[in-house]
Length: 330
Ligand code: SF4
Image (tube, rainbow, N blue to C red):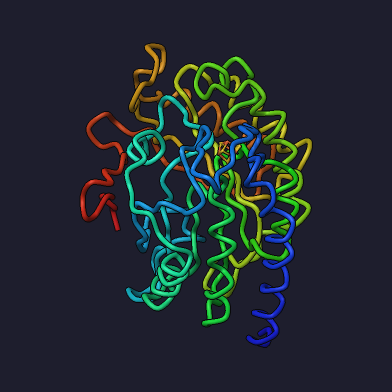
């Protein structure tokens, strides 16, 4: 076990280095591929609708993430991913199931100190990791919060749970800070990424970011409880009518990264918010099985599957206006 002081010293050094490099980008914001070039320190906002401070919807122990993150099966009090849902988003997919946060911007502004306290509180509740959901546009408040958090004893892995639309320059600065990368790889097709996320360059940017994540954390490292300590887990949500593009996503990962990365194939799509007509349905069993079979044929070794597509009345869409946004099957 690494000496705790040394661990925190090493993390603090990496955080300070990243802050020195990234803080200047906020006044002419190019912190993500949107490159809005607004001055967020003066209250201007770009696509993510976010100023200098982070807005948070909720921080909670999450029991529905991949088993290596949530620790399903572990005793109560020592399971759950310490998940912080940030408000705002730099991608804003039309079908987003978290639209209350990504589009409607619902949440509370937190000071950097309050964000640090939330991380420490989740750790004290037994969280297995700190899982930062939609961290891309709030990377600076996160980094600033990590300083007091590490000084006050944060010692669990940090999970960077992004939509994949990250800038290479930012991800390079997260070396030595992020323990587990958990990006989406949503599309290869620029037609899909333009239509659903107004980001025709999604794949061009995401593939560079994911290659850098893989360089930093190539191996999925589990502890003796089968809980992730380090690594890269790529999530892919299968969309209705888009199995061919899903297969291109898998083939790109196999050819350009590795079949030993974590791959989480999600069947839980449910049409939300402003999903266009052609994706106003759940996916079919046949669509999911076709994609799953390709993943198996390609030889992915660390595959996380959702057994069957969900039916309209059993979808997992959270409601962040409720005290408990999720309905988990524990
Ligand atoms: S972080 Fe926000 S303001 Fe900055 S470039 Fe991205 S979307 Fe625009």
